[in-house]
Length: 84
Image 1: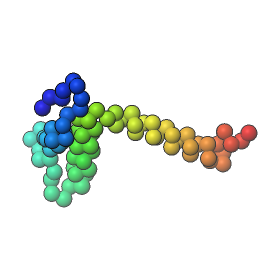
Image 2: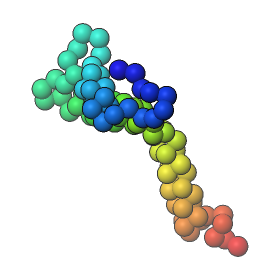
Image 3: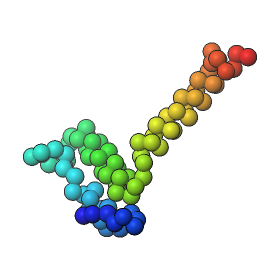
Image 4: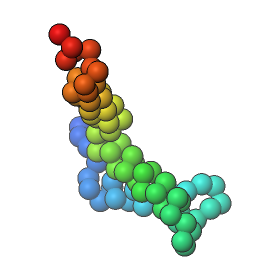
């Protein structure tokens, strides 16, 4: 699977990419009853899907975290911005 320079991959190519991610060398993608492994697989699929579509997922998550932390710092009773 190779992405064209002209645009993002087709949805079918992205789906094939998502389903081709193993949990590790020689291990199945999901072990029955192992919730931690299932969560890791879900995160890996999410990151792979975002990368296949050209979405800067890490940048979006950091930006959201900065906004939330700024809001919480400003709205706290001991927040520096509110003490004026």
